[in-house]
Image (cartoon, rainbow, N blue to C red; front, side):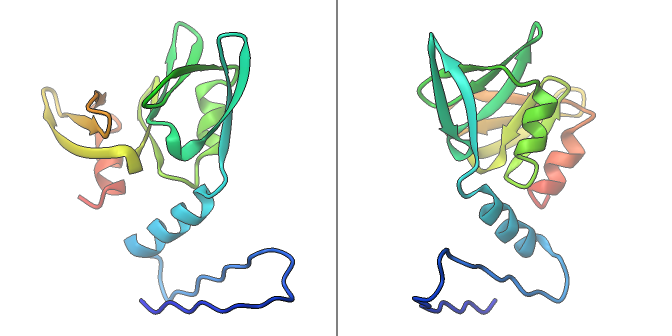
Length: 145
């Protein structure tokens, strides 16, 4: 891969151009990283509305019709449905791992097989989440396995 960086003081905002002959895993990772810059989610922590950078979210989970955003330090309730969050973060490192959960793959540090063709994902905070049999192949593909 060739990287060129150029200072241009006439620009009002940064501009990035990615040129490629074909989309491969490396290009997908670059695009996901670029699209994730500045992505934020909004939720409620107690009575306070908070904005959370998507990169800080370990996973999002829907429980009894409520959606929660899990970070290393807090659990934040979101007014959005899981499918709405999935649309907002679709070009980042998030992937659906079950009907009720999205996981930030950039926060996964390990994985291992789990009974019934599922995957157990180790998050960087030491917590484990399980990818269902239906979504495990997608997770493996996104991780390049």
